[in-house]
Length: 191
Image (cartoon, rainbow, N blue to C red; front, top):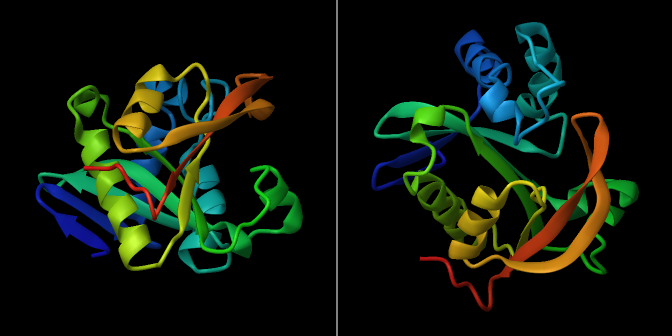
């Protein structure tokens, strides 16, 4: 268990069929894909294993996690120390300095749990973990402009918009603009 706080549990994703099948379920759901990966970018079980197994085994700097609400698996979260990325990948974030800076990404795969404030609880838990246990100085996230629900959640947790990232990520056949958002350790506003 990485984090257990109130009704929230976050754990490392395991090299187990159960975890891969959960991801395949979520990443073939059109409602989820509309905001994460794109509806034209389905992940069947074989692609899930191929994509996530290297990170699970520690052969990729991304740390993949599953999260639970009231002991029900409802979503995926990943984090990565940006200084562990290649120079090219770090440049995607347009940050001068990436030491002690972590990037995160997450989605709730069970759509019945959308719009209930659970994303804010999950995000608050991972922010606290990264600041307190991994000594992060800054955490960044880069949501699509077309995902206002996620942007509101991030702002509620203390993230601020730093800059617009034009044509930052391929989503549903076109490069989409994203916001680079960040929260600093010295000024965390999260609950």
